[in-house]
Length: 380
Image (tube, rainbow, N blue to C red; front, side, top):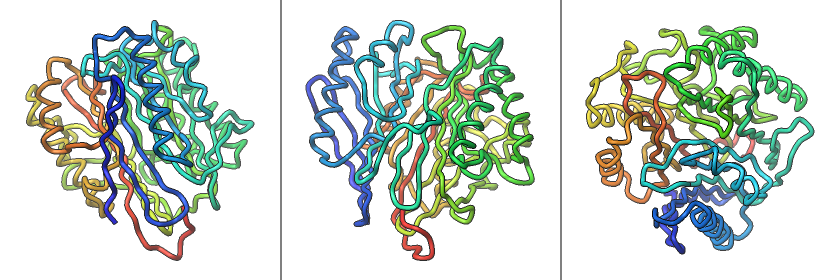
């Protein structure tokens, strides 16, 4: 079964859509929506994205959004309008990571068929089907004194929310995204907080960590230094969760003092979900490969991601969406041409977001979906 890629043009917008249908109950779609006229004022760009999203839903009857991320060029002036315009009942991540095609807004949306969605008492968004409740949370933030305190509070609140759902951070959380305002300055505090919280939760170098992206990103309030999105699965069995290492290409993150997994895959009877963490041009000694050379860093990053995917028995053909983070906007034209040549039609957005080490000029993350036949496991 080969997933389908569809490219759609709407009024003032375009969309790349990945379609996964393995013949069982739930079809999955990842769509990346882009504005095609960068001269439009923000209100018109937002309207164009919302109209394109509605048209996409009409073309995919029976689908529901389970997660959205809005990439904005200026959150202070734009985020409120997104909140007013989008009343969808799903987790909505809103972050200032400017789309580098010169537009003010882009949207990644994850859609499914035949699922029940709603808000839980804990404040997490629930997507339920079969034995599982998929729990999404987005745009979590607080106003504690610094990035370390903010991140510690974010994780502690999330642990409480998970407990309310009968879940644990160590057993049920599959993926996190940590957005750090002025990452060159504030990442150290985020790392310290995560390391401390994980240790208390039994997440150590001897057990496992959680797939994650830690990346530059601003919230509309400049006092928010750390913002978090996350995904957990209630009802998941531990034998369904596997971690990816690709030791020929990458080292353990704990070697350089941080705590996340390079990638995680989750198996069901009918499909495999692969979550590749933010991945840069690194080698298996933890060193930056090809400093100051954006093209070579891009190629090494692709190779690293490919090695992780291969460990999950996947290829780039199985990749459903890609987010590419660039430190320097001047690198956009080259990087865009490289991605367009290698991944034509793939749902992809390239945004302005500095990586956790200044020497890394580029980072990417992705999710892959593959049909499998594992009858001993429950269906998705």
